[in-house]
Amino acid sequence: MKMKIAVAQISCVLGDVPANLAKVRDFTQRAKNSDADLVLFPEMTDTGYAMSVIREHATSWEDGAVSEIQKIAGADSIAIVAGVSEREGANIFNSQVVIDSLGKIVAKYRKTHLFTPAPIEEHTCFSPGAELASFSFGEMQFGLSICYDLRFPEVYRTQAIEHAANVFLISSAWPFPRVEHLRTLALARAIENQSYVVLSNRVGTDAGTTFCGSSVIIDPYGVTLAGASSDREEFLCVDISPDVLKATRKDASYLEHRRPELYRRKKS
Image 1 (cartoon, rainbow, N blue to C red):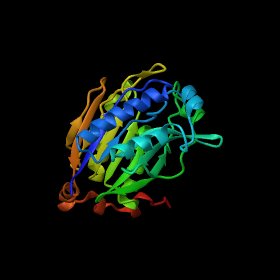
Image 2 (image 1 turned 45 degrees about the vertical axis):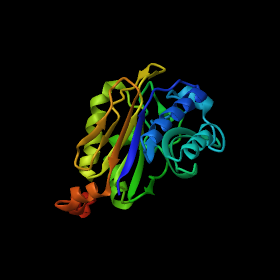
Image 3 (image 1 turned 60 degrees about the vertical axis):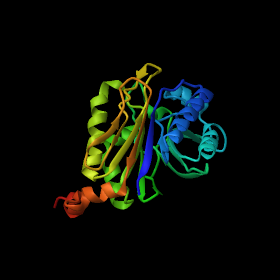
Image 4 (image 1 turned 90 degrees about the vertical axis):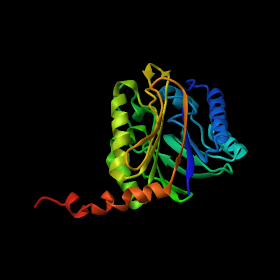
């Protein structure tokens, strides 16, 4: 059975959580009007992307932005996946929250690979997550990841093999100097795992970092179903289907041809 997936490519107002929530409401309504079942938002949708600002505005999920996003999802009867801050005790996590059409949190992921080079230096703000995450939705299994995780193919292969994930949802705040890396890596993750890749990336500039947009939905064969510009807010919406997954893997499934005994062999 087909499912309609939407992607919100947005800019954020740095440190202005109410303004960013207003944008979530607007794009969620657009997704609802397009009959989408799920809408994906970028990394740090609630606060914008600057470590000093995130430290100031990050909250627990019992209040703040996530509780408001739950209300939005419930009011529009649509699932929302968004990159958000998460404060737990002395720790702050760069997280993805999955909220179902009833407004309930059904899954979450804490970014496991932190980008440490200056001027971003995520490790000065965030604690790294300790596990990968996926969730079932309809007839498909969705793997979660955030931005820099895209550079680590092990994340997606592990999700594909151990979690049986066949749709990868990526929330991102990827900067302009490496825009071709984003496009190439997203395509590679789809092709090598014969899975859908659904990527929502930021546009705009936060604290001197300009983001490169280029949000995309790629099918399991590596065909781009929808793509966005590098510098404007845009909305993408397409159908994805388990039948396409089955057809892509019917004649030759790369995953079945793996030889793990070779990949982990120790030198004598």
